[in-house]
Length: 74
Ligand code: FES
Image (cartoon, rainbow, N blue to C red; front, top):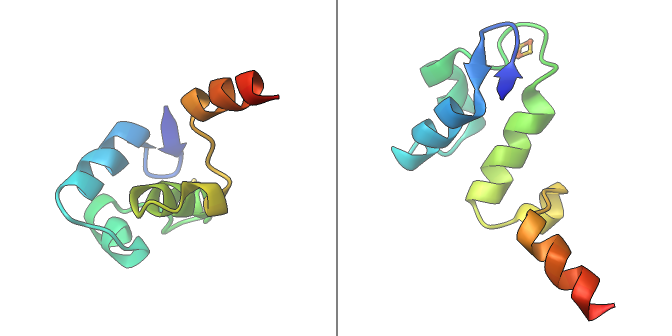
């Protein structure tokens, strides 16, 4: 899935960068040239960062496995 249309950066590239230890917006911007043009992708990049830092719920990031669990809990 393309996250940054301006720089043609896909989600897997962001995940790969996070896996190498780049864990800040500034770092991702420098490494991938992401969120450096129109900025429309920046909220989604933040979601990736927050999910990476284990704060996915706060970011609005919902794991489909969690949705299944919630459906069974209701
Ligand atoms: S979509 Fe990423 S900077 Fe424009």
